[in-house]
Length: 278
Ligand SMILES: O=C(O)CCC(=O)C(=O)O
Image 1 (tube, rainbow, N blue to C red):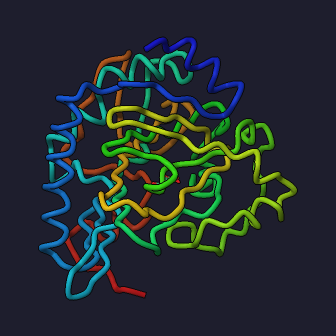
Image 2: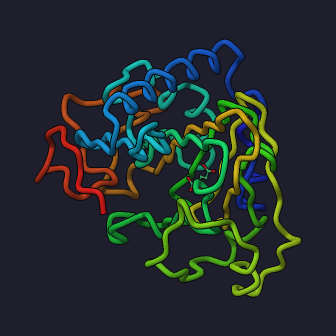
């Protein structure tokens, strides 16, 4: 891994890939932890929240877990995979050595339709706006492939250099997760669908992208689940939210109680519960 070269590519193109960010042994440990998260969520059987932890489970005779947010609160082995020294080294040229974390989640993309991510910019989810300063240069999203990611498995695709377009003012009332990948969304923005790049990631490879990079992912037509560990980091001095990940480049463990990160109702409703399904 060459953090400076990765940072230079990321600044120019709005995304970058680090091959073999984790070893095969680490990927196996992460996959086992993901299986434990999934088993807990499936046993609960429907969407479940406990503080910042949230299991987005589709209820039914065979419940399906689509996404787990902050699973580390119930599965502490994941701590290593949010404060891995590789992240500190990689982020140092982009964010410095004091870094907080806003996003920590695993996406399962089961076989079949209904779990696409439509074209979007993550900037729309960095709320409230006032809590995030210098967003273009203070925030980096990362995605770690637990399983193979390619076109057939519904892996991530990006529009290179779209981060330079800034906030595209995409409709905020439209769903991203579960809305079908559609090139007409790009055409409506005046962008050529041919510009899109399908990322091909082997287990253990890491992708980075900017909050303003347009990205999406399609249907998983493969038989295997397509799991993706998303960790989103922010320069600590530029953000009023988040859990510490690194101080002076050293890993910081989770505090005794969760901090305000992404979910606004944390203080009002910190206890475990099954949220109303709307
Ligand atoms: O998991 C995926 O395929 C998409 C992830 C994504 O778009 C996001 O986290 O913003």
